[in-house]
Image (cartoon, rainbow over all chains, first blue to last red; front, side):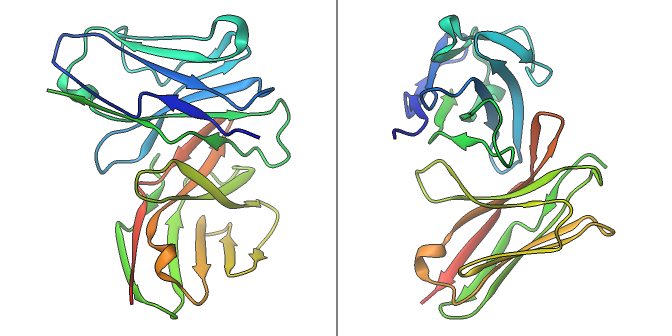
Length: 115
Length: 109
């Protein structure tokens, strides 16, 4: 079974540009999460989808971030316009509807560098 | 406070035991987790413990939970160079994971 995949693995953009990150969850997982780790700090929750609906987006930092999950399969996270403080590693995770231990399965992350 | 706390660095010699500590924040957290991140890779779930347990053992890994002190630890027996990685503890509050800053474990041959 394929794990969570993310694309691209690394993105370098200039301040003010737009970047779109993609996450493909494990097939059949209704829950999809986005997290972000800014250099040296903790991994912070951004938002949670259940199928195509946003269940919780309390962690989204501001309205420059837009997440979508059309059709309830893959998800995109768009940053527009990017700022320097957006640099970090963006992780996606997925879990089945009722995980036995609440566990989430993480992708390898997208490293975003804004210059 | 709201932060899950871990020390940033730990170095051990190959063959010794490693103990990574974590202090979490919410005594009502149902599950507590340990994730491992190897260089260039994603977060790999190592193990988790249900809050009504004190200890969980899985091969070389032992998780100890002290609910009174909100303290979680991960012990790795016979640490190998392949165990070098960043280890994150996490607690689940509601549907959200709250992670520590990660402990970078270096295993010296």
